[in-house]
Length: 284
Image (cartoon, rainbow, N blue to C red; front, side):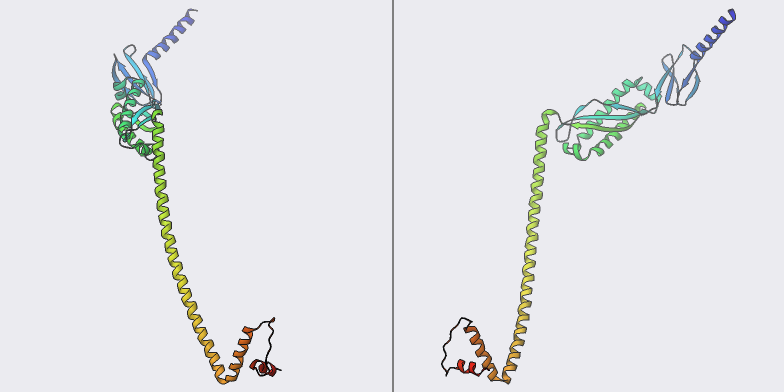
């Protein structure tokens, strides 16, 4: 019985000694050994380590990427418009000793990160008009904010990986006025485009009408030229034919006169001495 009790006491003593003299650093952690409240050693590699019980204390910090979701804050743009910005930040600890000396804990670090980001956000948004922030240059703005914030946070052993705007809204009292202004601006641009389009259409119509007139005039000229040449050839053929037989020409002309003068309803009373009567009588 005594031997069993002694064994239990020894096992318990070993556990207490292990807990008191040794500690484990995980692969996802940093460890800082403090002695009487002052940092003594920084451990960045995982493993089993020795410490002095009751004198040295171990403080752990995470190596993991962490996210800070900042509360919405109101910031003025270049054109003096208030904008409620809701952003988040991804960050991690890269120098645990510097981080510990600056903040002691993560909660204090988050407050400082919020101050840095808000300051840089206010500076950067103050360089841009509201319309640029809302629709055009948001990625470029956040890139600049990230670079500036990263530079400041490095002094505290922190690396800021990325800062993004989740939401950018107008304060309720400014929404209607700003939307009305944006609508008026869009209408002005639309009118300008319509005016430019109408002017361009008029130019195209005028040019087309000019080309049409030139084409028709050229076509008419060619038609008249062809017609004149044809008429000349016809006249020449008639002249050549009639010069060979003048009586035939006289007969043909008389037929044309009769054809143009009478139709199938015409009643004609002729004298036996008239030229028409003689001509008709001669036809057999």
